Image 1 (cartoon, rainbow, N blue to C red):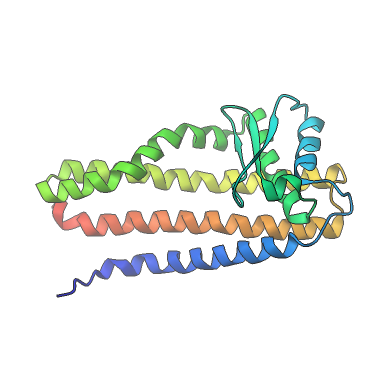
Image 2 (cartoon, helix red, strand yellow; image 1 turned 135 degrees about the vertical axis):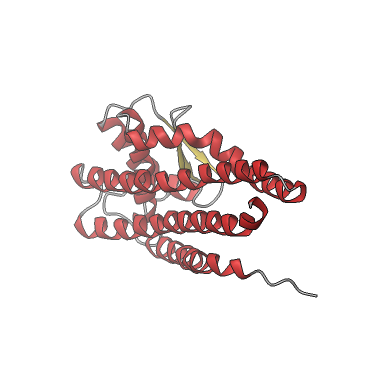
Length: 227
C-alpha cells in the first residue's frame, strides 16, 4: 500500500543542513539584534554612508515589509531593507545592511559572478517552475526528450545556486571591509557582525547542497525512463 522511495536518502544531508542553517541564522540574528553599535547608526544610515563613500549617490534605499527580506535590486539600483534593519542600530542590522550595500558595490564595479548570476535569473526561474512538469510529462509519455529537457532546466537552477555562493561571500567580505575602513563598527562589533553574516551564508550553502541533491535524485529517478 505504501511506496518506498529509496532515492529520498540523497536529500537527507541537505535537509539536515538546511534545518541547522535556519536555526543558526535565527538564533544569531536574534542575539545580535539586541546588541547595539557604539556609532548609533541605523542600518539605513550605515548603508547610506557606505554607498556615499563609494560614490553611489544614485542608489536609493527603501524600507520594505517582512523579516530578513533585505536585498539589492540591480535593475532599479535600489537597496531595500526590512523594517527591522532599516530603523535598528543593532550590530545585526548594520551587518545585514552593509552586506546589501556590498551587492551594490559589486554591481557598480562589474563583479563577474554577479553579472553571470543576474543573467541566469530568467532561465533559473523557468527551470524551477517547469522542470518537474516536463519530467513528469516525459515519464507519463515515455519521452526521453522531455525528461532530458526538464533535467537540463533544473541544472540551470543548480548553476544559479552554485554561482550565488561566491556572490554572497564576496558581498559579506566587502561589507566587513567597509564597516572597518569607515569606522562604522569597531573591532569587537565587527567580529559579531561577521558571525551574523557567516550564519546567513550557511543558508546559501544549504540551498546549494539541496539543489545539487535534488538534481542527483532526479537523474536517479528518471534513469530507467530514459533508457
